Length: 232
Image (cartoon, rainbow, N blue to C red):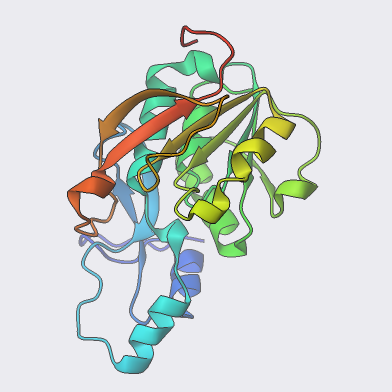
């Protein structure tokens, strides 16, 4: 279900493009390599969007449909790179990718040797994007539309850019109800305190396609609840 053209920024995935265009006029889903995750590509919003000035109605439509899945956010890139560089976090384990969006973290976990990866997102379009991106990268994911409906226990929960609002901080405890370990990457909230989460480090990255975000949102912190001091 793809259509391929050669010029940069042109539509490559028909279904995802149709999903975008129901809300965002003139948008395309095109294959893009990730500058910070070698060898991994995703179908994302065309980097030259918009090519013309939006009308007021069109601008409101874009705001009312925040297609998070059509971007690979800085935290997702950093978490995916971390998993590929240190596959011991996921090898042979059952992993939940919470708020999967484009699916980048879950795809990286699968590439790094996870036994099973479940991509979870309340947005059906995000799950469709995760399916398409998993196929693009030659891996298989399972899917769940509601965190509380995901069956069974997990060895590890992955979460990237899900703390953007402080009202989401209760998820820190909810993750621990489903898995003994959590890897969380975030660039928005920097000062939360939780007895089970510790900082692993900070890395620089940016959103793809580039949103020209301020420098503060390009610094990504990874937190872990691993019960051991050493990384896997």
